[in-house]
Image 1 (tube, rainbow, N blue to C red):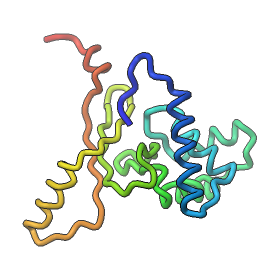
Image 2 (image 1 turned 180 degrees about the vertical axis):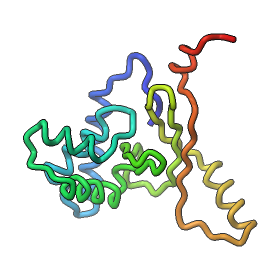
Image 3 (image 1 turned 30 degrees about the vertical axis):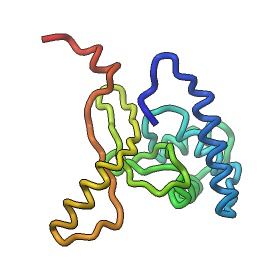
Length: 160
């Protein structure tokens, strides 16, 4: 996933994500129920991480009989099947651009507009693994979250 460009077709982006999720669930023999699917759609609704309570509110507005456990169970399922990522610092979620492919989480978080992009840089994975190994540490997982400004927000900043 990258930061959206001005002519980004988000409908196609979401449709592709849902197709990939359906395929991954089928491959795993898992069920993407209506609630799980809708939560995934809501997570993909923008390129900004979304919190569980925002998802709960959106489901309620749509007439789903949703309580916090319903949303958290759906999020747990989506996380367990690699369809979304949890952005720890924000306690929020965003869609995974590579479901079904094991990878570390590397995220650029724009502090200006709130959008996020997932990186998939093997050099970062290798550097983390090597640095950990030098300390005698074996990584079992990694998430890298970096704050900054996307190009659109940087363009809005006054020149000094």
